[in-house]
Image (cartoon, rainbow, N blue to C red; front, side, top):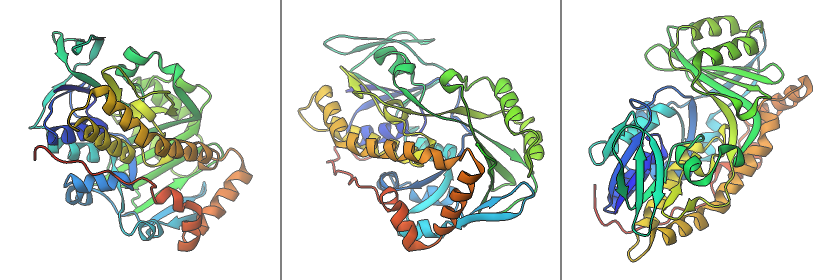
Length: 398
């Protein structure tokens, strides 16, 4: 069976890996001219960690990842005013927890499949026409081709979803924030293995020191513009960040100065995708394209990997149609995903509090999270995923 996957991020290459295990012929297409860099640091645990282990990825992920020791809150003068010890999270997950740049995780997955599948960079899907025998796909640049099924793994702003399911506005639930991230080389000061964050009301800016003298910066702020953001307009988005964080204390002037020389700025809304169905005919969605839980869930990449694994396994079952496989995939995962989306939505107000009182309360809660039994009470259901990966027979070994 010939499968076209749109998107070479996290979900797409993970799906390609497991479809190859099941004997499929896979083509991946990505609108960017090369594998994307940039993005933000993610915390990696749960079912995604289990999928990575089954893929043999753990040595590479542990090599490129970070064991962050502390989340440290500072005030406008840089004084330590709160936070928690991250080791409590590792204890709660029995050591199966680390932090890694999203681009590093994507690169490690990509390297597992780059020689096993057809890769097309610098192009995107322009049209999808389905008939009884398959799907006719038009590309922006390449000539039309036929596939048996098409999978949209192309993120929050999925082209496949727009072509088959309709306009993004119908499915996006904006949570009231925007997020941005970039890297700089040679920034001082450095605090190894510590995430340092400054949080005035309605905003949060943080930094984490990376290897090779790099520093990753993350901005989150209340934003009324919703889905009118253009994530690809770097100049306009830098202007927005200067307006939001200019004139604040701590290291904001220095961080904004470092931003001016960066070429790759990640910028987007903090949103969820809520769809009544993750498939239509011979087309299905996976990862953020299907069910983006948002930055606030903390597990977007891990959930994308778990979903890709299940989708490939269901498609790989003998004597099944794509539509039957899509239905089983969604039936298994939807309750679990809805639970994660609901938890993230509830967390939104405490992630970036709007008032000084809200900030004070949030900071006190963070202090208590360093105590293991309080962490288990507060976040036990979040850290311990209530979803067990199914086992699928492998028809081919990579």
